[in-house]
Length: 513
Image 1 (cartoon, one colour):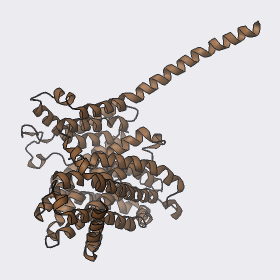
Image 2 (cartoon, rainbow, N blue to C red; image 1 turned 180 degrees about the vertical axis):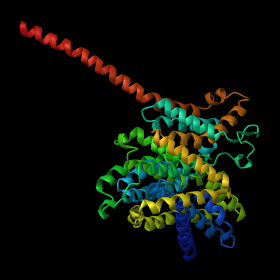
Image 3 (cartoon, rainbow, N blue to C red; image 1 turned 90 degrees about the horizontal axis):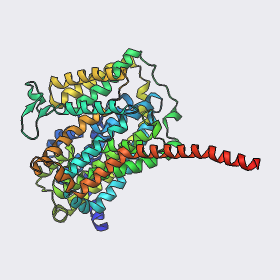
Image 4 (cartoon, rainbow, N blue to C red; image 1 turned 120 degrees about the horizontal axis):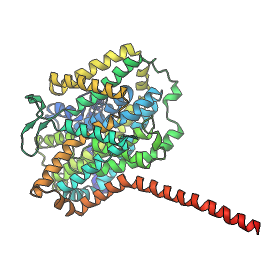
């Protein structure tokens, strides 16, 4: 493996490849900052620019765009509650609250550091175990993916707060919204009301922009514009306590992101939600999540970056895209005359290992660009909101329109902006709705495929798979485990309380004697 890595760095460290890697990372960051574009759109738009490049140089630039967009989307999620991608939605929950507390700098800095560390770890794992994980991914058919989606939906419990029924209801609403479009099984349009633009479903990027950006803006206007944040420079830097709390969350997010990223079609969004759910379960500061906890920023961002790297396992080894952006990149491979698959590592080792080496280089460039700029980005919060709010509205609407060049996207942003505003006024959690919307299509696809394999029955396919049953047992443990532990502790306390009077009575009798 050392020989392959050396070959890869030898190819990736040429002056031309370094230049285009830098350009890709820079463009990706800008694309991520613009609401509505996202990495998949950015890569698709810029593929024609690379047609005259050497295939390795072209892929290095496109991969740089992919990684840069991930962090760019987090910048706006933290600063103005406008997630540039669905995977950065979870970062909004704690990141924006940190920004409102005058700690936007630490939020951006820890996001960059956590993403960098997770990228390095996941890339070493990718280089070491890609063939093994590819064989493991082959065993993940529809029944196993259905079990994974059930596990993902169970994280609604984590995002529901104290009112579990309300959270489950909002998650169901999200799933129902996801049902708009063409039925997976029959190909019949449903709930589209004759709108051809809705055949592909309700676009969740526009929904996120409406729920978070416009919803938060309307809520701020209702409560009265807050004064611009004027944090001292030292408040924009990371502290030892921040670093101490961030590393365990980074480690958990990296593991969750890499494992889910290796699965075909799982993508990065599910990984970010699952990582946040893991923090809700295992973090020492889990009660602070949702109030501006640094774990709530670094864990999902680490998971997103790890998953974006792991997405290349099924893409390169199996020729199956791991997510939306890698699906576009898979098309780029074919345009350049490269056939991804099991023989790619043997037939074109220089290209494959050069591309993997460029991931290391791109993440180093990304860290060098954005870590020093974190306090600078945070200074945007000093701008008066009378100026910033119109900019947010214009940017959000233009970003939504640019996705499909359709006014329907603009109306979706406006409608869900009103929905987000209403939910904030009623103090309803937004995350369960978003989670249902994101996982709904994946769940339906896995359910339909599993049912087709079982000729209309799902249960035999699930029970016949040891992997699926293991995942479902994990679901049961996560859902029922905390309640069981709480009940067990309660019964022990009751026994202890009952034993204390008896002990007191015995000691009193002995004293009398």
